[in-house]
Image (cartoon, rainbow, N blue to C red; front, side, top):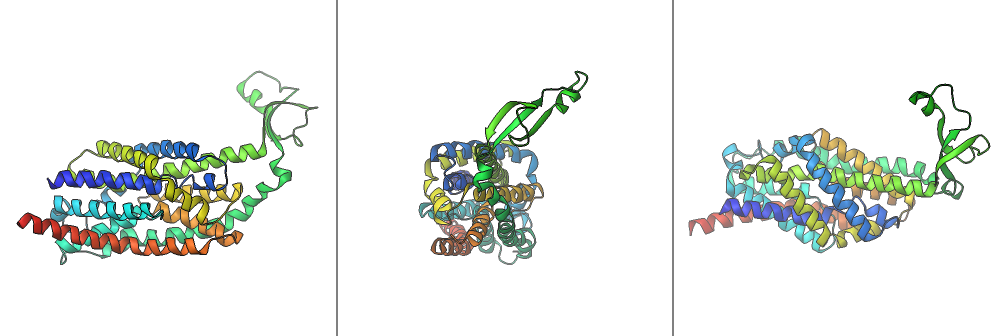
Length: 365
């Protein structure tokens, strides 16, 4: 019975995680009006699903980290009571945040659940130092790094918003006079990428041309997809860890979590998407692009090295950096988000502690 509950709450956690997290990567596309909500939703869901599947090969370290191993004795980690308490507490915490449109961290909710369940079931054997070494340092540093990088990159990217640049035509051109020979190398040597000014029609033939603004929007969409891919890559193993401990195979767990995340995103992501895209700061196309580049780079690197950073904190940190740099930040929303971050871990810990004791009492009766 407890194993069935653990699986139910794990899939429920993935569902509400999709509602809270799926559109964070494309929030800047919505905020800068590059994509409509429907198009952004499908880009986010497809990219998240691809990231979830890729996590089987690249992020196995996170499955081990979020199984609770080392925090409490192995006998407790593998108990149905422990994993049910953790998954239930995290699912309830994220569901409440999603209901109020608050972008919070599933990572924090899971860590809080591990801590609360561990304290309820094995308080004397609880090794809190594992949390500091494995979780807290990357969780604390990642948003600060994102803010700093966003502050540095955004001013450079704003140059792309200048009309003189945005209106230029980017083109792939071929020289009228081809190099000698017909090898691939000689054909490649005849091609050049530039603008109409650097690639005049008198000496080159434009094979493909595209307005610079459209090219930047395309790159922006790619960066949004990269953030969602990175989010799926980083978050899926954390939730799949509970299913793995419950006895499911790693691949089956990842697929089940990925499907639940996508469905949750399709059905319940709109409120958090609005908070991320409109209520933190207004942004230009280039600012949104810079925030996504920062987020995707940090989260993919963290997944590669098994560091459990919060995609939420990294993406919001990048947006906070934009707000600090452009002076258009909405302080009330930012402070509300920060308060929700502070409360996520202790709330999940309390819920896991209560859930564990409740199950014990019900079992005795």
